[in-house]
Image (cartoon, rainbow, N blue to C red):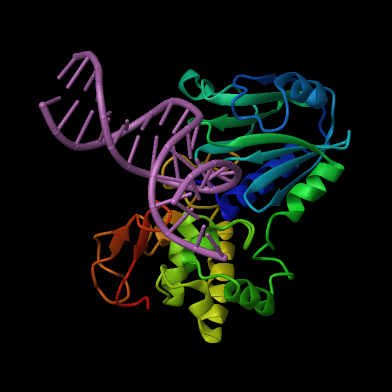
Length: 275
DNA sequence: ACGAGGTCCTGCGAGC
DNA sequence: TGCTCGCAGGACCTCG
């Protein structure tokens, strides 16, 4: 499921393949993934526009167009953004939601099996508002320890839920929240405002480290995720807790606990290592 | 402010 | 074999 490292991987794979190219035609197969834009308007704004950049904000891939519009792609759980040079096989092609044919034989494709993802088309002011509502980028300069400690202190929510709240920290989802909390030795259900200063510091460091390592490994392929060139990621090999409930903790051997009590998402942790 | 629960969507695996 | 059912989940919503 694409979180920050997976979306960053799409963006890095896509940028050299699509930037500078004009969109010759655009086809949308399902309108149910659109938010705040109609199919007709989306197709009209995409057609003829040149792609001036591809960037990332939180878990959103942002295709910047030269007509001052931005195509903002949130892959949800099963969405992927790819640059392809030849048609996908039919059993894959049926899940293409948006197909933008570019100059010189490349296509920018949004593929999504379950269509939990969202496509938006935002002009500059709308983009500014949208981005301003999202929390700081955890790999950016602006995410200081002071800032994080202030965020934690203002909330009694379980720390794991806070980490996944995009208004508080951008781009962390279920997999990396579980992993970072394990690495930092913190119980996922601990109220955010009860973390000590040293726990906050350790958690922040582990979040930054794991996100950077996952980007270096081209993301985590648990089920559906593929990179922008169709390859699986590699970070699933490094996972210490996610997907390992019932297996022994790699640090102490205790059987890892899996629960759904936090926001109905699978939470996996070691009750001995994480306090 | 916070937790609980529903909604969107489809593939997949379990159970019969 | 073929069906029904529950589950997976990121973001967003309502309710208490």
